[in-house]
Amino acid sequence: MDSVGSIIVYFVAAIAIVVFSIKTVTTRKILRSATYLLFVLLSTAVIYFQLGYQFLGAVQIAVYAGGIMVLFVFAIVLTHKPNDRTGVIDSHRRKIGGGIAVAGGILLLLAIFYMPLLHGASLSECIEAGTPITMHEIGEAFTGSDRFQYLLPFEAISVLLLACIIGGVTIARKE
Image (tube, rainbow, N blue to C red; front, top):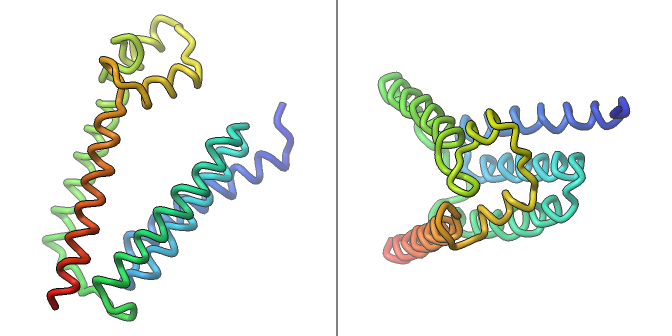
């Protein structure tokens, strides 16, 4: 049975993730938004430590909260003036953005439950069959290069992010 202290720490971290996630996308100052994102990443690391995944928590802090946030702030400072405020988004664009966000969330949930995850079986099939899914199997699925493994899409996204940052630096130098 979990202790009361660990339950309190879990709920504090979960509430921090929700609050800082909302603040990240609603603030009008971009550097402040990056700071809120840093708090989200650190709170996620706290949850990993609570679950007993010390290595994953350390990677979350070192790679994401450390390296990726430095990269984001570097790109922001190169492409924007730090005290610039973004304009207010009109109601029509908010509705379109909200609709796209809801559609994206639905597609994400469908992908989580119905895309092949382990040995060609989806998560919903594994749950229905009562097959236990270990952390080792999930790690192999995310870092493997065989069929139904996700290393190639992960690397493609990292190259895409690098190309976006290089494009931002190029645009900042032209202005």
